[in-house]
Amino acid sequence: MRKSNYIISILFLLFIFAVGGYNMKRVLPGVLNNIKNDPAYREDFNTRIEDDYRQSFVKRSTFIDGYGIVQKAMQRNVIGNIEFIREKDIMSAAGRYAPSEQFLTEMQSLKDYLDEKEIPLLYVQMPVREDYDESVPLEIANEREVFAEYRRRLGDMGVEMLTGNELLGETKLQDFYFKTDIHPKTSGEIQVANKIAEKLEEAFDIQINDLIQEDDSRFIKKSYAFDGNLVKSAGKYYIGEDTFEEYVPMEQPHYNVENYCAGVSQQGNFEEVIMNDGMRSYLVTSYLRYGCSYYNVNNMDSDGPNLLIICDSYAYRTISYLSLQCQNITIIDPRFYGQGEGNPIPNAVASRDYDCVIYLHGDIGITTYSMYGQEGDVE
Image 1: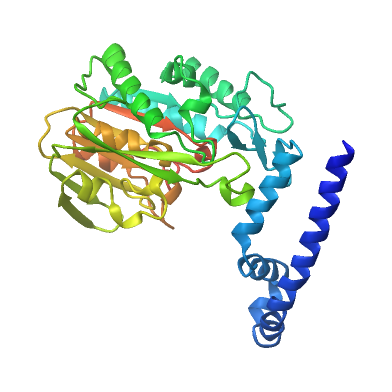
Image 2 (image 1 turned 120 degrees about the vertical axis):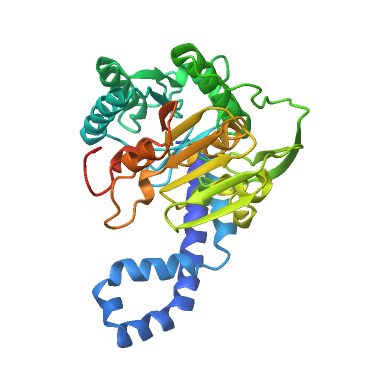
């Protein structure tokens, strides 16, 4: 390490210790009161005091920004407790994974079930965010290795696939994904929607016409400064801010969105029920129904195809744009199954004639959630 880096490190640590001591002085009276009066606090003391200290930290976001500036000055590309990687102007969450045998078993049973119903299955795998020409060692992050294993195993099953490289085409990773957030840029999700439409027509003769394009005069384009979910640990100066782009159709179809989780339905246009303006604090989840495991989007002005999509939030804008040209899109998000909630897939398949079922694999971690809920089988 260069001498200047040593000096920066020492000064930064002295500053953190000083601020940390001041912060503990602010937190300590409340902690002592909780220890005295709250048995649950005493039982889970280590976790609770850590949460109290972190949440009450004075000017927390300012110090995180300062941490990011120092790490950038030191040219650190792996930061935190080996938690985040910066490479080629994009950040990733580090982590080691193993292929989920549960996911692979469920995909085989799903394919068999859909084959009996004569419904095609398409597996869409988002581009691996950390695949920087293998410059990031597998000891730190091995998502590319696990996704390759999924492609191999699903290929052996005969599952039709749309791979990350096919979705990217000539687009660079840093042009596809936000640099401060794990999700794709809006331009990336528009690209995914069009690639899915191309694949559906090529593989299954399912047509989705007149989809949104990145430069599309039928839409009003709005731009916002955006600090994504990775900024919370590195600060907005470590890698810079993003721009979040919204595309609002000038002619908006009428929708009926049935939320099967809550037992309610909502009617309105694209902005009213698809963009979901009540959740503007995080623009990625300003679309569809974050937190709901099972719902249907019915475009009452379209006679396009009916799709069932199993996905996470990587697909929210993709699905929103597909909904402009589809009659029905049913969304199943396995992350949000409630306690005791059963498998929604048979109910969904029985409710309407689907042209295709799509498993859109965004975050590698979605495979830790059974797509069959508590029941563990497709039927």
